[in-house]
Image (cartoon, rainbow, N blue to C red; front, side, top):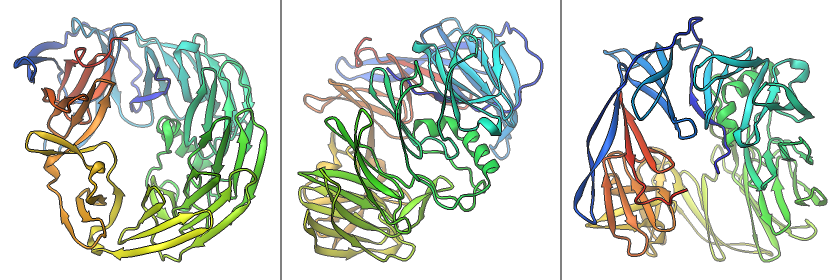
Length: 518
């Protein structure tokens, strides 16, 4: 079950008027693919609107689709401030309710049939069938759980800015409260079990959403404090994305704050490991501290930790997030710690002026550290690092990341997963070009980007591979294509339907033949 609060519509300043709308959205069908098993055409349902589509959210719970419409400047193709939001019946196209908007300081968020209107001064829950406010409070919402009839909110009052409330979705009343820092947003959330949420936010925190109870491990995960008033506006503007992992930082909002100075959360059986700016720690899932080891706050930045044998390895990248993008901070280093007592086994640091480890790859006992202009390859053990070789590459490449397991290349009629290539390394650049290197990084060539596909939806039987123009469905048993859709890689999956949009249309594909029935 997807319990994340999904950002849907960024509305900015509702008009004061509200009206039920008799508008009927035009629905048509068109050919939008081919079932390659039977060579029969596949049709898409198409919803046609009076102005360009800016966003949408379908929900099966009350058979509705929320649609955001927004005007564009016909000459520059830039979005205008005026538009509408409407909720329609997707079967008939009949509008249930509709509002005109002027985009400014408000936006909508939705999960299932729960719709919130958020502004700088208040939070409103809207009735999904009428659009009218059900309740309001001076809060900002971070998470919602319709199945629990609960939302997690912070009050907007400065005196209570660090008090998290569990809010009843029916009446907006606070069920419980807990002091819980929020100045720098939430980096990530994960469920430990059916009743316990793990929140990464200036440390680690567990939360039972029904009661508000849990433990806290507070850590520093930012650098250079700044005006808290600005930070609160940052959190409000990026709350939905921040709650899903990685806070959005609008350019120009904060000029001197670095965020996400922390690691992944590594779970091993009943214990977890986590590093932040000042410490690397180990404790049980029940909250019992096992060990802490101090880290150098001047050199530590965003990091990744992993375990091999009885050793915890930490790759410190030398960057943190600024304006929502990587920015050099601290120094790149690799350190190792005893998994049972936290004793530091070794620490290897490099001086890289305004350069940092943009990505890394672990293959057995070898560590590949990727910078913008070079690759360092080391053998590692709990005794230290042994450099195999370093290879500098064309500075114009500005390397960004190794290719992931989700990237495929089309060769003739076959689709090959590039990360399985034993003879080459494939690296994306900051310009989104793909470079193919030999195993020693001595020779390179650019890959035709039009041959690439990304896996964006999968189950036990099928893989959905997409590019900017189409989606290919592969049978996982023999890797052969079984269907082709005119749907781009950024299509959205809701249940047994696939949606994509362009200009003033939303297209809906029935993919029930290739996804399990809930």
